[in-house]
Length: 294
Image 1 (tube, rainbow, N blue to C red):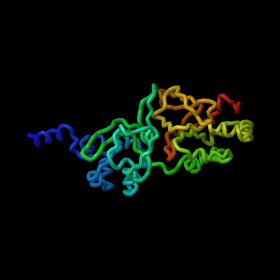
Image 2 (tube, one colour; image 1 turned 135 degrees about the vertical axis):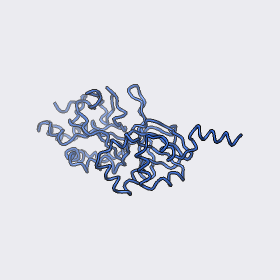
Image 3 (cartoon, one colour; image 1 turned 30 degrees about the horizontal axis):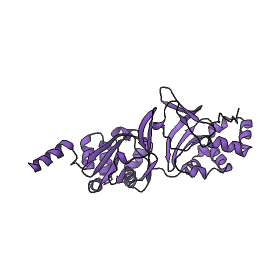
Image 4 (cartoon, rainbow, N blue to C red; image 1 turned 45 degrees about the horizontal axis):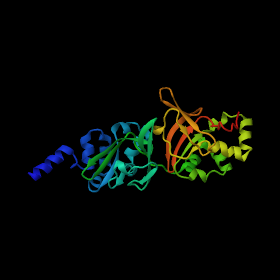
C-alpha cells in the first residue's frame, strides 16, 4: 500500500517529473523544449538540480527575426543563451530579494527586482516579469517568464560608449567626470539621444556646459540610484535621481503604450546592462528645483 501511495502521489502532483519533462507536459514551452533539444541540453538538465526561468512560446515570439535566426544558426550561441536562463540548485521564490544578482549557468549575472508598492506589484529578472513561480519538479524548480533574457555585455558606460546615438551624452559625462559614478551598481540611466540634445538652443547648451556644477546637476538628474525597469513603473511614480534636489515623475500615455519621464518620451526602454538599466529618451531632463535651462 505504501508503494501504491507513492505512485499515486507522483501521478497526482507531477513532482516526479524532471524539469524538462514538466516543460514538455505543460504545453506552453514548445519552443524552449525544441531549443533545449537542439542545443543538446536535455541530458544536462535531467541529470542535475536546476532552477529554470522558462520563457513561454509567446515570449520567444517577441524576439526579432534577426535574433531568432542567429540563435537557430549558431548552436554555441543558442546553448549560451539557454544557460542564461538556468541556475544550478533549487532557488525558490522565497529566496528572492530586490537587486539580488545571481550567477547563471553560463557564468553571467542576472538581476532580480521586486517592485511592491501601491502602483504595481511585480517581480522581474533582467526586467522580465516572472509570471508564475515555483513549479516544482523532481530535480528542481521552474519559474515562468514573459520574455527571453539576453545577457548584458557591459555596464552603463560601456553601453553609452558603444552607441553612436549617445555620443553627445558620452562627451558630457566625460567632461563632468561622471564615468566612475555611472559604474556604480543598481543604477537607472534615462539617456538623452543626440537628437534630444539637438533640441536645445545653443544658448542653453552653453549655459549647461559652461558651468561644471550645472552640468553635473543636469546629468545626475538623469540617473536614479536603483534599477527601474519599465515593468515596475507606475503612473505618477516619483523617482529619486542622484541629483537629490528634485524628483522625476513617471507618466503613462496612449493607454499605457508610451512611458514618459517628466516631458521626455522613452523611445528605447529596458536596455539591460551589468549594473542596472538604460532607457533612451527624446528630451534632455531639466531639474525643476534648479531650472538651469529656460
